[in-house]
Length: 65
Image (tube, helix red, strand yellow):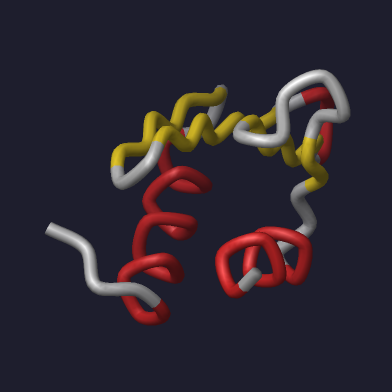
């Protein structure tokens, strides 16, 4: 799975309880959570800069609108 590989390469792990939820625990207790549903995603976390870096990396790898 291309998306799953991308997320794992970027330090995320997938929840066992829900394989559409990816979490990256970052420094100082900060985290980013990405929820994926079909062709929609929701990203949230503590640090806006970290979220923006993830969005840019996703945009370079996948077609996003």
